Image (cartoon, rainbow, N blue to C red):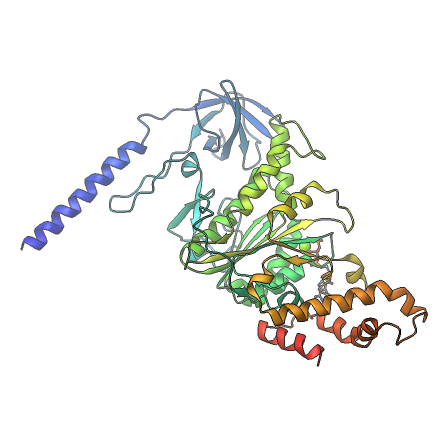
Length: 466
Ligand SMILES: Nc1ncnc2c1ncn2[C@@H]1O[C@H](COP(=O)(O)OP(=O)(O)OP(=O)(O)O)[C@@H](O)[C@H]1O
Ligand SMILES: [Mg+2]
């Protein structure tokens, strides 16, 4: 009898505690501001005091509404960046802050201590698998509502660097050249550096289909709209799609949606990681993300610094990238691939430079290889996986190094060999490079529909030297 009474009291106590917390969130009355200016990409509004990063909504006379986010202020004027077209806004249109979602009695209240906790919350969780959504969490695939009851803030708190599990295990990506020569660790963040049309999307699709990760989250940011469909239907395919969540914010969506799309894809990945899963996050592309931030920063008056990029762009990149990686010890992980547009020898691109500094490795795709039909066009001389030496055996590393040496030696003497100016026997390493060249070439190439697991990749690497 007493047990039942105790439970009864405990339930009531919890309920009253929730009510108490609820009173803390709710605004005593609805406040609103007014739009005073719309110029280019930004709106200005007066009459509201909101933190940067807060979400707002602007109801239009037509009944539609424009969602916006506070991206800056000047005195009393707030700068708002809309998520959609600003068509239909008239001078003096009202602006309402979006309230943090109110907890239900009995649910565990979220500690909303930071401004980011009060920013937009979007759906996450298993219901997103097999679905395609836009940067605001709206389904794009015509398969009906998501029906997800879990939401998460799109800008989550980073993991304390000292609490993060180190990278100690390998992750099979199903691509021979990467598994053997540029081994990826669970929780590693890599850049895929390449120009246009060199095979980035196809390679990412192969990784998504063949990796042994539990869940794939794909962020298609700022790419052409046509490519989104192609990536999902042809490259990812039904088998890849079933365990993937895709967030698409193509080039024609407003810059805020492109930024938000990248943050949202990361939030979805974080949610799966926090459930202990090994997540593969694919972001195509980091350069377009930086360009979206540049558009916003320039629109609110930040001065451009390097090649037209304002300083805030270089501050935003590590914030996004640092959210990927391993979680707490014994927990899940986010292994991430970010594509970076860079044209071969152009070492001047500031985004490629910045990305190289914040990622744990880079895979460079080479146009000459692609032109010669060498796919995936991975340039093993220029690419590096910084985690490889801690996660692979000494024996594996020695073989990879040997292959790289032979490959480079052949490449450097290629002209001599092709005109017949090299007499065999004068350089034993080059002799071996020439003998093995065809085998090495075909080892590094891989068909789109071919899946080569880690064991198989290593066995094939070993058999090269037998
Ligand atoms: N592994 C492969 N095997 C055969 N062909 C390939 C392979 N990878 C890429 N290709 C060819 O290269 C073309 C371009 O590839 P992809 O669309 O992946 O390039 P991209 O770098 O994503 O281009 P963009 O910069 O336009 O997005 C493909 O249409 C395909 O014909
Ligand atoms: Mg592409």
